[in-house]
Image (cartoon, rainbow over all chains, first blue to last red; front, side, top):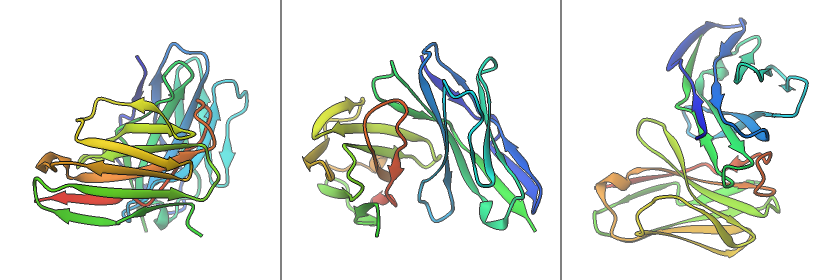
Length: 115
Length: 114
């Protein structure tokens, strides 16, 4: 069965510092995609970054990068130079080819950025 | 221009009522989804349509019925609302139904059943 685990319910980070949000996944499928979404207090779900299982390089999008360690089945999100506007819930998600088109989400990590 | 829109944004209703939530996407995507986010923020897929055909039908009560009149629209009708239906319902869309497709979400509909 496929599973996404986010072990950090909440995290604090000082403004302008980098922060890593942990995500581990479990699947026996060789083809899968990993996603990170941000949900600010206003409630919308914002797509941040995607990593495919066959991608050899870590994905980057502006201040976001995905630290993909396939052997360890981890897909941590790194936010560099944190800003106050980064305070939000962050969800890790996974789709697998044999998963019947379903995307499963982790429980989320709430990030607080301190001024 | 809103890519994925939902109406209404808020819905407060009494137990036993029937209500609908509408979703529209202007991205030209083939696949649309309904998710439910509970009070603990847990997000779970309910339904998915690809080119107007149902491809995901999770274990949800049959009081919930999706309908896709065309590729750009996916509506959710809920009969005989119960207290436990209170949640945020998100519509999403993606280009296709593949494992490598990014889903783009609507703003959510906050449903409160009294």
